[in-house]
Length: 222
Image 1 (spheres, one colour):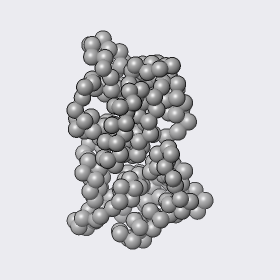
Image 2 (cartoon, rainbow, N blue to C red; image 1 turned 90 degrees about the horizontal axis):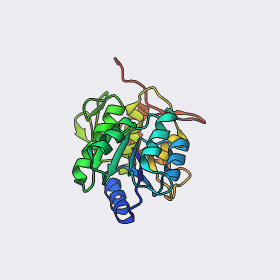
Image 3 (cartoon, rainbow, N blue to C red; image 1 turned 120 degrees about the vertical axis):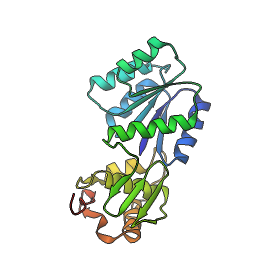
Image 4 (cartoon, rainbow, N blue to C red; image 1 turned 45 degrees about the vertical axis):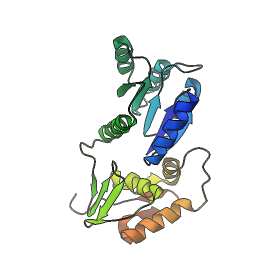
């Protein structure tokens, strides 16, 4: 899952990036509103964490413009503005949740996962795909009730693919979901991850759509 963090406090932003990446989220970080709006318009993210007091364009303006463009990306506002009017204003502008600083990191992580579950139409935290059970909150996966060890990127790739069975995920979209800005990506990195997943589960799990990307078929009976 790919997150865009928009926070101009350098110490807080750095700490959040480290914590989010430790939880398995691909995290990109920007420090002003204009850059944030451009990024959301041009690239694919699963969620935005948005401060309100930003340079060049404040968070409410960013959020308003995102919604005016009919971009339905989930947005978690993370701000020091704790007045009732601020909360109401943020939610009315299109925020999916509103958290006030200082915050408990464990709670923020839980809220992120809950927002993404809702956005993907899941009521529970387990993703079931035939004999595969993936638990995003714990970053664990089982196949035929046996634990399977995956790297962070293998886990993220499997989650992306089995969350939308039958949907062809393009190569570019998958690479974006696995690697943040500034990370070196080998030309065959995605193919290597797919190869490892096929070995750890079964070869037919992931089908290659030549020249486009990859797809997992819907399990039999679904």
